[in-house]
Image (cartoon, rainbow, N blue to C red; front, side):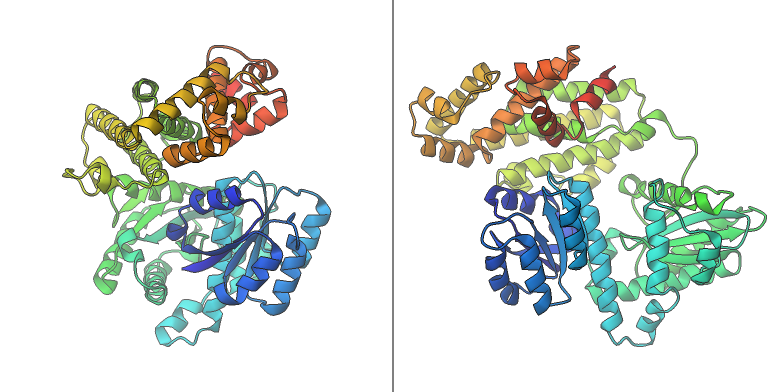
Amino acid sequence: MYKVLIVDDEFYFRQALKISLPWSELGFQIAGEAKNGAEALELMPEVEPDVVLVDMNMPIMDGLEFIHKAKERDQKTKFLVLSGHSEFAYARQAVQLGVVNYVLKPINEEELQGSLLNIKELIRSERLGELELDDLRKQASEGLSFMKEQVLSGWLRDSGSSRSRPQPDRLHDLGIPLEGLHYRAVVVDLDADDQSHPDEGMRIHKAMVQEIAKRCMQSAYHSVSCQDQDGRLVLILGEPEGSFNNLETICERIRLTVQSDTACTVTIGLGTGCDTIESIPDSYKEAIMALRHRFVWGGNKVFVHSSQVDPGTKAGLYSVEKRSGLLMLMRIGNITETEEWLVRFFRDARDQKASMEMLLLAGIEIVSTCLEFLAEASQSFEDVFRDTTQPDMIQHVQRMKTFKELDEWIHALILKAMDHVHSRKTNRAAKVIEEVKAYISNHYGNEELRIEDIARSVHMNYNHLCFVFKKETTFTINDYLTEIRIIKAKELFDQGEKVIQNVANRVGYADANYFSKCFKKHMGITPSKYVNQIQ
């Protein structure tokens, strides 16, 4: 685990950041937090963080001064700036101080996760160079240099961006021989059960997998390999005639050899063939898509990307918007609207004629949302489902055979989780919370609505009301008010309202720009894009 120190003067932002990402799954642990640069400097020797997430604008000592002083003490710590400052001067100074990346607030979780994984790969690469390895470990470091790894993995990752891709002569200058007129990408990944080994064991297993894969491929194709940002082995194959007829057979041989020689298993994804070097990143993306079949059909298999993808696969079923909508309804505790959401979701999935594969993937994602809801309420799956006969929900979903079975099981899961969380509130507190929710429901359109007004309506002290509401619901009154306003705004858009300013005014926002930011933060999409999707 890599240790992370959070430095930001906003308490609630620090708390939100700690629960916004699956830190342990990403290989990180939160080791400390500080509200300004001076406090962070004192913590540095004690925490010894690998990564520091730091804001620019803080009292006492701002982010730039802190980074400068911290770098004087320790050159190995990596810094990632999280700030609302978008001015070029700040970015330039941060880069000059050796900041690895710069992510603007409000934080995009996917962007932040990608930056952390890049930092993790950078740290891993640096530490790998410091270790003295035996013969097997030396084999893992042989082959492509750090520069080659960065060029290839960066090129694959940035496909479709405005950045220029490496030209053939540049690849040859780096000793990357992509010879041939036709190309194809293959991704080899250790299965989840085999990734619980210590870091040292993982390096050895990955080195052995790479050696087996290269040995099996070398007699049939020109090939070059690298690890992508998620640590997966990527093989780029070149073939003069474009004949990849025996590729699946070779990949099966790799899979079986890994299983017999290493006591590990791998899943392999194959992209489709392409005719130009510039199209290789597209084949790589297809290989990743093929690899995702593992989550439904299990690992230790070879999956081939098909160019004939059904509409459900192209569009996906469980978008960021749908996830946000379901999570909001579960937090609010509205059983009726939650049931309506589930009915609409499965009805739409049926209308789209989504494949069983996509339905099962959506089911797994909804289960993850339910677990997130329980975690927010400091509850666990075991607390809710003590009598369950399916201890592993993911496997249970994967074993489902019919649309109806999945539909009914998801309904029961969500409603039972909501009932468990919301029924645990004390009678008095629950009554106050319901009164607050009712008041907000009747007055959310008032842009001047204040918490003091709500407190007077329930005859309770302002501070005590804030404490009770947060304790019983796990989120603040302001957060709840925002969620209600966004839900009502979505309903207005769904009913045909297209003017964003009108909707903003009707749900309590005088500033349409601020409303748009709040809508995107909660729904994962801007109001204008949402309106266009409805049309």
